[in-house]
Figure 1: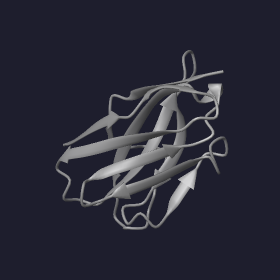
Figure 2: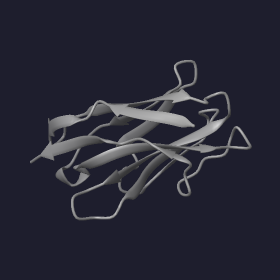
Figure 3: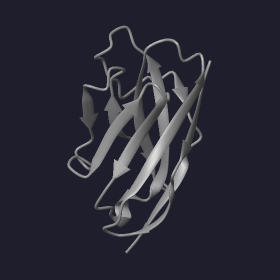
Length: 125
């Protein structure tokens, strides 16, 4: 089992920035690709960004490309989401997820194995 705990959410004005963190614990000796998802009120959960275990490969949803950056620190077993130029439509609960990977360069954006509970990001206009 892997436990994921997000932090860093909060209230920010449009155009501002936030950095989310996701700390992993438990059976972390395997290779895990990581991803961020979000769910806005009344909407379905959507993919935001993904990163391979190596950290060398990333993938983003079109809606956040150029504004958000996903990164990871395997020594700290933590993945980050730097969010810049935030918009009111970015308001959502952001959750991180992990998936066991066979290859260090693989990333995933569905069928994740483990999920965190999420952290709320609110962007005011």
